[in-house]
Length: 312
Image 1 (cartoon, rainbow, N blue to C red):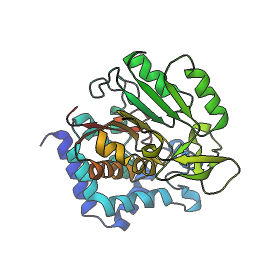
Image 2: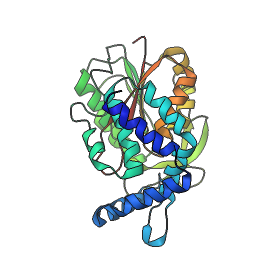
Image 3: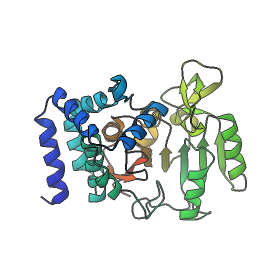
């Protein structure tokens, strides 16, 4: 085995031979070794973004650590399965870096994996595109991903682009930013596993972190991509603040029948990193998997799964 394999399976052996209580205790001990200023930054981050659970040592809140420990104990075989399915060692090292960061607060390995060559989603060595692309951008925000795509592949490298965004003022920016490009359809809709009326849950930090919920003031129509888009889809990007699993279920027909390239955020909880690849594989086993990191060195964010059909 090479260095990355040895280090990954060494960590797996440690976790496999530890109880939940031992893993949780070791995480707490490792967190104590983190500089106090960085500890405070991590705790504040989890306070602002309620994806992973709270962490507040002074008030004896360890929900974030408990969820990580549960993930390791209950799904260690899924991590191993995913590691084996990853197609390059950049991806394998990133999975190792994420697990080390969760368990050991290893910032160094995570920093080594930060992508500096390509922008988020569009790794030209992996994601090949042409003029026949029908692209679906879930969580289109102000059109930044579409503009990045046009910059990387060219303004004539698509047939049609569908953008989905839920926030009123952001949606206006989206339309304004993309209005000069033809064949781009902007939809003020949420995307999930069924059609229903939901409500926008506004983030106190940034509109890009807005989510949907069962109650609230501002209504939004939720749709499935299978129902909303009838033509063949070739690429689906998702960054929808933890709703990726449900949106994926709503794309099942397209995935089974058309094998689109899938570019999906997998960092909004402690299970998407392995669960979303499992879901894709169950829908269609004809995919290769890659991971890329466009976040920072302190905690794994902006982690993208690139699921590319094998025939492609």
